[in-house]
Length: 150
Image 1 (cartoon, rainbow, N blue to C red):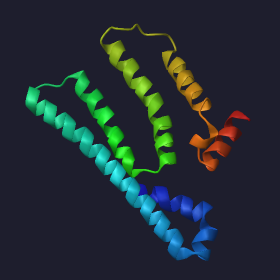
Image 2: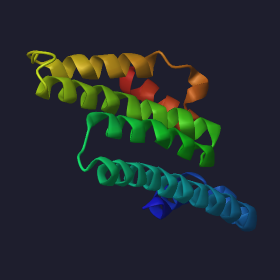
Image 3: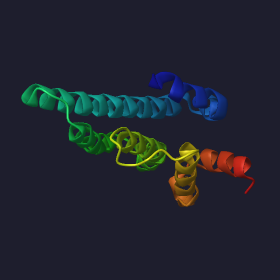
């Protein structure tokens, strides 16, 4: 899954570096690819391993098991670049809000709100817009500026 993620930007945006210094560029791309694979493997192992452990030990599923698995996955970010960790957080935050909303709604702890998904999106977007510029790759920052007109 990560091979196209690393090769497509290389071919479209860093092709000059690929032709000028192919060895260094390919080595850099391979290291990034390997790092991403280690992140995903560790992430999945922590989630699946923790869920399976508690499911077998308790013979049932509890909500806190998933929450604990999610917290443990923070250790997998040790394989990623610091800038990538910020990107992952920005991706995960809106999904965390959505999952939390669905969890509490199913259990009757909160009532459905008409157009509630818009409220959640707005909160997630506000979080994204309030982040520091250093938390974004220059390419992402330019794309975001293009989308919001800044």
